[in-house]
Structure formats: structure tokens, C-alpha cells
Length: 134
Image (cartoon, rainbow, N blue to C red; front, top):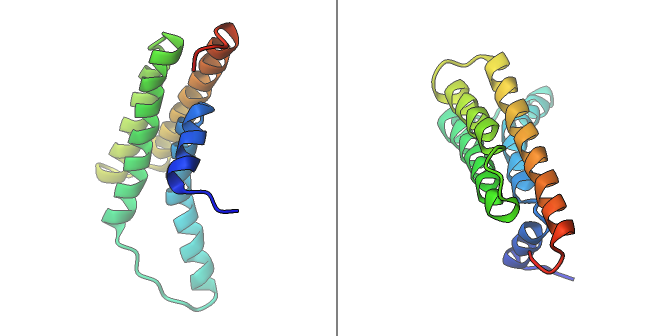
């Protein structure tokens, strides 16, 4: 059975997991690429990664995650999770394009993850309270 990407994305959005999916993509782009390059280097394969494209992908997915949290306010009515989401995405962006600091990067991912989890909880609660509404 094959699933079209549009159907998969709609299913993710319908369940309120868009923020989680984009956060996972951002973390995978960051640490997954690093792990893949390290594993290939251990095998003797040399791979050149354009750091600008790599950092750009990380920041774009982090920004999409923050956007998803912001859009969640339509569902649950609380803009509160947006503040840590924007702060986390900004810290990630600064760590990628400003001055790299692994503590800033990890703090950004932690804030963004906390905001995504908070948004997911609020969305779930709103859906339980109003089952007929998406």
C-alpha cells in the first residue's frame, strides 16, 4: 500500500502532529546528518557537506515547527506556547548562523520541544472538549 505525501501530511496535521513532525525533521537534519557523516568517515568515505545548506535545513524545519505551534492557537485558543517556540527557533537560528554554541543549540531545541509538547497537549484537550470540531 502506498500513501501519497499529501495524504500523509494531512493525516499528521489532523492528529495535531505537524509540530512534532517538523521538530523531528529539524533534529534529524542536525544530528542525523552529523551521525551519518561520522559513520561514513569511520568507513573511510569522505563526504563534503555544505554547511550553509545543512544549517538552513535545520533552521527552516525549526521555523516550521514554531509556525505549527502558532497555528495551534486557532485550535486551542492559547497563544502561550508560541513564546517558547519562537525563542527556541531563534536560538537555533542564532546558533546556526550567528555564533555557534552547543549550549544555545541544545537550549533552543529543548525550548522548541517543550513548546511543541505543550501545544500538542492543549490541542488534545481542546479536541476532547469539542469532539465535533477539528
